[in-house]
Figure 1 (cartoon, rainbow, N blue to C red):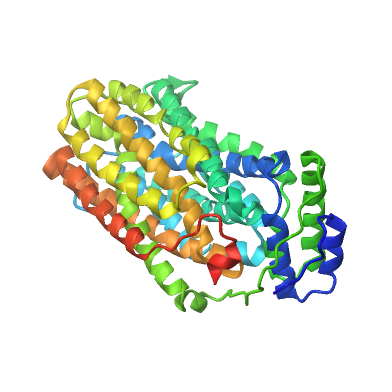
Figure 2 (figure 1 turned 30 degrees about the vertical axis):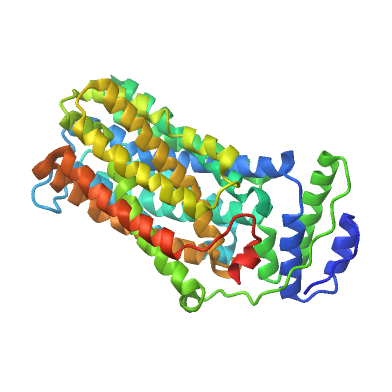
Length: 479
């Protein structure tokens, strides 16, 4: 065990740090973070990272909303010629998820190697450039290529933001921090849905409306790149890398702000047993991480079918139910209002219940409401079931984003999360084509039966294999 002076003073904790080994120092950094009260400075860091997540989700989720505009412009077709046709809406969705897959599985290690802050910044700039170029494409091949390139940047960014948040906040508020991130992020859904409703059916200044939807998101992300200057590097990552003075400097500044805001001395850090940090890919396949990795791979493959099978196909599914394109975009905008409500609920309940329990419960809700959606034709029923599906999906989203970052140690957190998360992107590549085929042959009912089967796998994987993580230090979970 690492022993600490029986004092809440920041200077005492900093002084003790000078005599510790790197492993002990990393354990002390964790203990110093976990004992901090959740003051304005802590939540400011969460909100800044959440703004980055807003534009990630804006970019990720505008796919379904601009699809009718791409079809009307003659760039894409609503169905595909053959299972893997490259001129249909499914190819546009698949191009994004192909980029996300490569970005998460092959580039997740970058944040472990170069730091959370640097990769957060440069991956953001990458996808801004890719989206601006994509907005001026005239062919399906050009559109899909630049959608793929944007997906690379988004994939790296999504992994980095989750890792970053889990390492910056005290253990008592990790669930709420991810709920805040998702609440801010998912406000992008009604924003992009409303913009699509207003812009996609029209042309402005000689440009199709779908191009304006893309450009608005790309230019907004530049603002996030500018405000990122207020973010410190993860002190846990710095300590793990042996950059002890920098880690200590970040902690002293954070402790100074929190202590001033709370108006009382900080409590002494708890004694924490140091752990040997693991950073190699092979380390993911030893106990206890092997079971966790397999569980999250299964989860990510099948939850993607449920989440994006609805989110990316809302307007198209509504059209299939007999709704016109313009009206389907209006209904989609109304349904999208529920997107941030799930995480907002999480701000109150996220740290009261185990993450795995919430995931399983909402997966059941997803099955019930999805099957009901497929049998309804009246507008009120479609909107109500759509709202419930969106609410359940986004409660699952904030829960599992927190959960998967908690399951692996700091040295390989971004790499491991990137690897298991990448399987959701791999799944989405093929599920887009499969859903398009199922929709064509079996209609909306067939799509939701397919989704229900996928969500059953989610229930069994998380319910049977998932460990407890609520209110536990990351280092305790790692052991």
